[in-house]
Image (cartoon, rainbow, N blue to C red; front, top):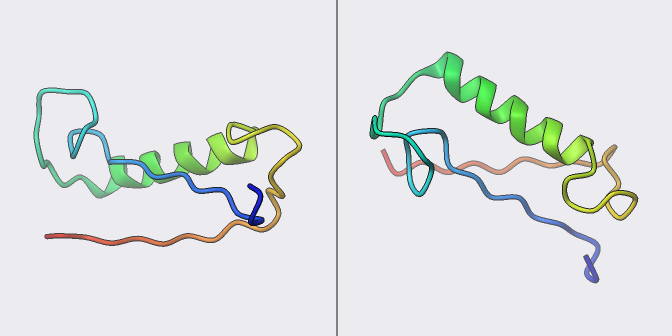
Length: 65
């Protein structure tokens, strides 16, 4: 936050270090739900209430598939 940025990195459910038994199942509806949950977390102050300008959110995505 000192540099003016905060970062949230997440894995889709069933990928990477996330919980669950099913591995690497591609489900676009579930992926969209996961993105929405991540954005909701940021907007609710999950990265530090009052410390993050939630009107200025950028997204960056990568895929290894």
